[in-house]
Amino acid sequence: MAQIKLVVAGATGRMGRALLEAVSAAADLRLHGALERSGHPAIGRDAGELIGAACGVTVSDDPYAVVAGADVLVDFTRPEGALTHLRACRAAGVKMVIGTTGFSADQRQAIAEAARDVAIVLAPNMSVGTNLVFKLIATAAEVLNEGYDVEIIEAHHRHKVDAPSGTALRMGEIVAARLGRDLERCAVYGREGVTGERDPAAIGFSAIRGGDIVGDHTVLFAGTGERVEVSVKASSRATYAQGALRAVRWLRARPSGLYDMQAVLGLD
Image 1 (spheres, rainbow, N blue to C red):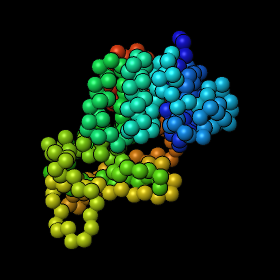
Image 2 (image 1 turned 60 degrees about the vertical axis):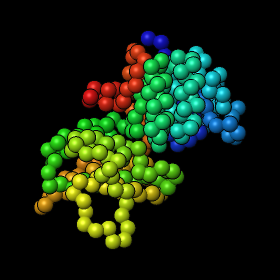
Image 3 (image 1 turned 90 degrees about the vertical axis):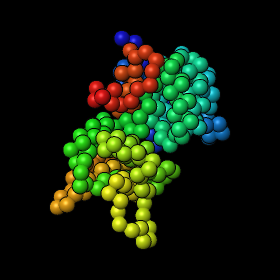
Image 4 (image 1 turned 135 degrees about the vertical axis):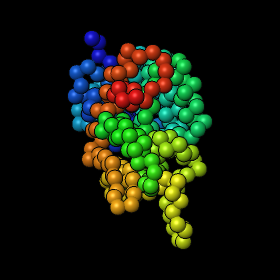
């Protein structure tokens, strides 16, 4: 079977480099292109230099040129950049794996509309373990549906710009759906001062930022006399890269449509 021709967006970033390393080690994948924002000092350099071995693919800031002839683009950038790449992929008929978080409702709608023409996997977290945890907390919420308070705690490195994380928000959405609650109404983001007694319908979020924490997430179900905690902790971005490449391979045979990692892993 022919190699899958892959474009990595945000190639110089932490996730971009992890993806470049993972692609270089995969026999069934070939780096087709590497993207960075306009003005970035890496533009024009060999993308392989970012991981210590030249590969003949030059970092570019022109997504329309780079996606020509590609099979899939993987994006772990920012919402605005991801939508620019989305437009280029839609025009060229190139599939996308989007691990970027922080999209607004309108931006998510734009992704859904593009999925009418190209196959897209959109997920706040590409980790296989984290997506298994999504399944586990859905079951936990169905069982612990009375007498348990729900709190979601996440921790990330000092450079992360959005809070709560997209993964934490997805966890909240899953739990709220199983409990029959509207997350927009019941979410509580941090607490300070005299907050009063806890609303039993609330789903709380706490975000920690510091050091080089890759990503820790815990959903806490606190009842009377016991606590149930479902946690996943990433120690390397390689887990996200490998999950993203699993999505890339899965997309090869998929028609246009919007998918998530639950579908990729057969958990839906």
